[in-house]
Picture (cartoon, rainbow, N blue to C red):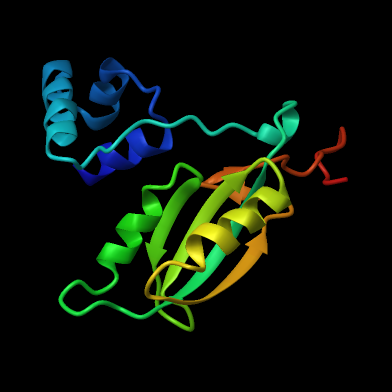
Length: 158
């Protein structure tokens, strides 16, 4: 049912009836499958993607790269758990390459984000170094294009 999960991931507003037609299954089977996937932790939640730049909400997003000294018998998991429990933290990823963890956070101002990094992340045990990058503009997020190119009456990009 990989196709089913892709459909649902792309549009969580699809009803069981719509999914049943799209997957050539019975509505009851789709409802049972959704319930089972939720119980098994395969479906973790449902989100709406909002273009906050079109609202009056002020906030900044930052990507923070962390070098971490892994703990014996725990690797990076313990540090990641401490980090993802902060409410400012939106995402935490274990990475390959120069940095170990990638952390996405949101704050009201750059100063608030800088304070969070300097006073909560950087002093943590096992954090070796940090590099903070502020998101200046979102072009595409989770498969959704923000403010696609404007099209003139002939169908050409402006």
